[in-house]
Length: 117
Image (cartoon, rainbow, N blue to C red; front, side):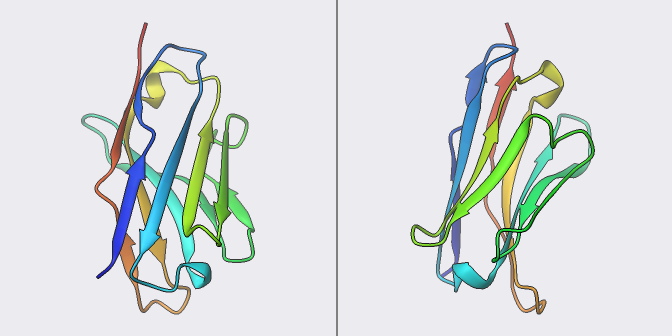
């Protein structure tokens, strides 16, 4: 059974940092592209960052300067380091695993990040 479990969200003050983790199980993690999306209240889901099985990265608009995606294939875990957080970063952050061949497309349940003073 496939599982993607996010953790690391919470309440942080503007300018603070958080590191999100996504632990995967039930599929061949190392061959999947891992992505982070977010959905703010009243808005659509947007891409934050992605990383291929060869650790090639991509970022959503305006994300690259403050966010860093990484992965540890030995631990079946993807990470999202978020620095200099702003109130507009408040959202539920979701982990997504997608097979480059299009066979599998899995989602976690999300972790809430709230940036507020």
